[in-house]
Each structure stands twice: as structure tokens, then as C-alpha cells.
Image 1 (cartoon, helix red, strand yellow):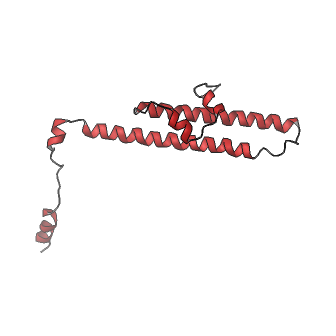
Image 2 (cartoon, rainbow, N blue to C red; image 1 turned 90 degrees about the vertical axis):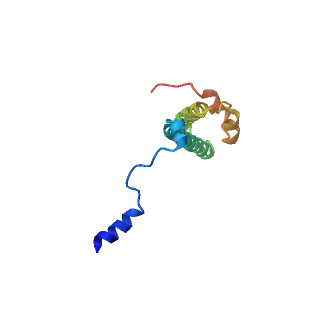
Image 3 (tube, one colour; image 1 turned 180 degrees about the horizontal axis):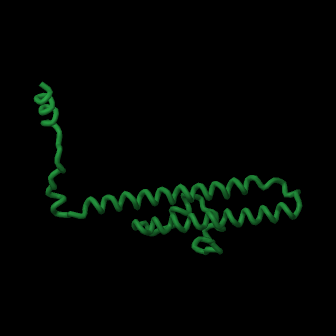
Length: 131
């Protein structure tokens, strides 16, 4: 009794690889192209999130400056921290712009405008310090 039930259940299932469709015969690399496009978009999303995080850290540091009455020691340390945050943000901006260019989006102006990238970060884009 179990064999007929199993046979009925298996009749509705596909147990072999799907047959190639007419479109896949015309373009055998379509699946690979699709996977590449997915990865490019995913990489662009990761780069965008990294840029947002770097800009948010820079903005948060700028808002937490205080009244400036702490003396030169803290201001020097704060300046070094800010320089590091600007460098991180400019590196993230450069990576994001490169990812956009890789998928054909050549104009960086919408990024600068929509992400509200400070001029200081934009001017340092692509200028890498010691690693």
C-alpha cells in the first residue's frame, strides 16, 4: 500500500534537473550574468551602508564637541579622532563611488548631494594615508 502512495506523491515532483528553456539556449551565460549583477548590487548596498555609518560617526563626533574649555590636550586628541573619522568617511566614499562606477553609474553628484557628504570628506576622497 505504501508503494502506490509513494508513486502518487513522486508523480507530481520533479526529480531531474530542469530542461533548458529556449532563452537559456540562446544565452547560456544568462544565469551567470544574473549572479554577477546580484553580487554587484549587494556590494553597492554594503558600500552605501559603510558610507552612511562613517558619515554618521563623523556627524556624531562633530555634535559632541562640547564648549571647548577643556584645554589643548583634549582638543589635540579630538582633532586626531576627527582626522581619523574624516579619513574613514573619505575611504568609504571612494569605495562607494568605485562600486557605482563599476555598475555604470558614472555621476558622483547625486551621492554627494543625497548623502550630504561634507566638502572636507569629498576633497579627501581617494587620498589614502598610511595603512
